[in-house]
Amino acid sequence: MSDQKESYKEVFKATSIFGGVQVFNVLISIIRSKVVAVLLGAGGMGVLGILQQPLGIVGLITEMGLGASSVRDIAKAKTSGDDNKISQTVTTVKRWVWVAGIFGMVVVIVLSPLLGKLSNSTDEPANYTWAFIFLSVTLLFSAVSNGQVAVLRGLRRIKETAKVGMIGSGCGLIISLPFYYFYGIKGIVPTLIISSVIVLITSWYFSRKVQLPPVTISYRESFFQGKEMIKLGIIITMTNLISQLVSYIFYLYLKDKAGIEVVGLYNTGWTITNQYVALVFTAMTIDYFPRLISLQSDREKMREAVNQQAEIAILIIAPLMLFFISFLPLIIRLIYTEAFMPIITFIQWMILGMLLKTASWALSHIIVAKGDNRLFFLSEFISSLFFLLFNIGAYALFGLMGVGIAFVLQYTLYLLAMILIAKKRYQITFSKEFIKLFLFQFLMSFLCFLIVIMKGYPLTYIVGGILFIVSAIYSLKELNNRMDLKSILSKIKK
Image 1 (cartoon, helix red, strand yellow):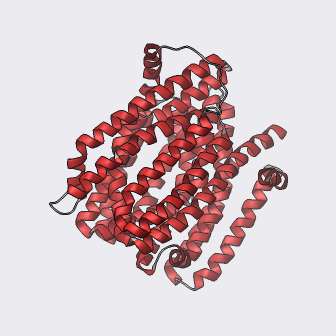
Image 2: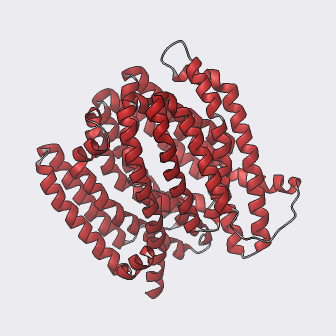
Image 3: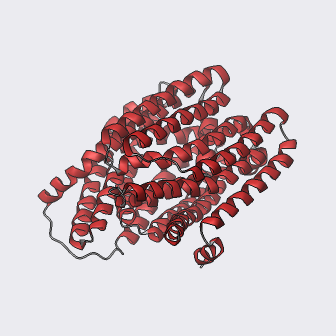
């Protein structure tokens, strides 16, 4: 029992550290979003999305999944306890990400006229073309930064990884404010470039603090060792590419059907919903994944890790989701402006789906940790197709609210698929304890959601507030049952 408590403590510690970083990032994002909303409006948010989506797609292709696949190799090398093997793997990663970054930069420059034309709603794509040319350098900076962060993640350097995110967000905000104030939409491009430079410098500073023995490895050896990483990386790239591509197609669909303003509303709603649950999903990606890799040969310990992560994630996210459902109009007015109020119903549906996403993600990481590449690709490919079809069909019927409904449907099916795969292929299932707390928290969220739909505001402020308190007390009680919560919070504070 004490071993289980220690395991819960490790999960909670990692989640709390990255959750604290995410809280800081959210505060930064609130300030940035308020500034962008006031200075650039919904149209400016739309331009951000139109520029970032194609860059994300090209970056996914040219990075070849090294940012994720290298974490797996570094974590495996760390598990072996061989410092020379770790050094060789780290050196290989750092060499390969430079190649990937330069390749990405060249591809964006070559494709900039096409990207500019696709992104512009007029026949004059010159401005967007030059924007993509200037922004091409961010792919180089991003690839190198991701490689350096992958080293920290693979070695489970939790504090250093957290600091990279905090410093990057804080400095990025300070830099962006004067550009948006003085140049408006024209300040978007320099802001994105300077922000990527800051993350590059920060990640370099902390990654070079990792003390490893010097090793001699030729570029030829690095090439062949890197090929092994790329085998998994290509699968990750293909799945992420499909996800980004269908997302970009939907952006273009919205732009053509409803205009750049609706794209801005959709992008804002998506950002709001995801940034507040990222405190848990970030911990899953950065700490949970390497931990699963180290346990992949022990099915029972892997099952324990999955359930522990899922339990902690739901207990943290559920009260947060209830709070947002209950007070969303006030939050929108605080962070943005009155022009963004139409996204309220869309966000409420997405929040309901986030609990389903949390549970499904805990299971989906098993597939990658096991190196089951084909299954991972197939499951994510089908999921992405459902995303596109559901979103287009739901928007045509119900507008932005329909996109929120589609999100709930998509993750209901995805969770059922992950449960089936985990049980049949890996003999890993959710524990009765997790199912009990998940159903309780989902019921609380669903009740609050029904009150919003049937009675609206201001009644929801009162009833939703009560449900939020009940959910929070339940979560604290369950967390305390699993560990000495008071002592852990004291250590984290220190």
